Length: 124
Image (cartoon, rainbow, N blue to C red):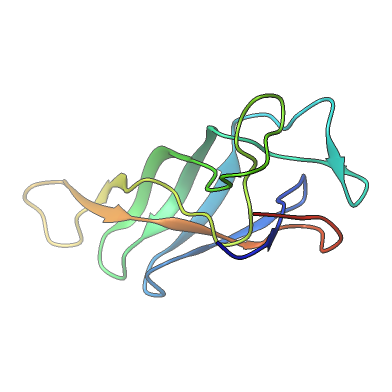
C-alpha cells in the first residue's frame, strides 16, 4: 500500500462522478490530540452531509454518509486516519424530479478526499 498524505481540518472533496455536484459539509470531528502539518487529523468514521446536490438531472438533493479511513499501519486515537483518495461509502441522494410525478427521485454518489489539507505527514 502506498504512502498517502493524512487528511486534516481544511481538506477538500470531489465527487467521483464528475457529473455530480453539491456542497459537502463535514459533520464529524477531527482528533483533538493528533496533528499533521499543524492541523488536527481526521479519523474513521467521518460523517459528512451533502446539500444542493445534483446528478445533472435531479436537483436540490440532500444526503448523508461516512468516509472510512484506509490506513492499515497507522492509528489516530485508536482509529484509522483518513488519507488523500479515501472515499465515502455510496451515499443516497434525494432531490427534486425535473419531470414529476413523482416529485422526488434518488441517485447514488460517492465522495473522495481530493486535497488532504497538508502534505508533510503520510501514512501507509
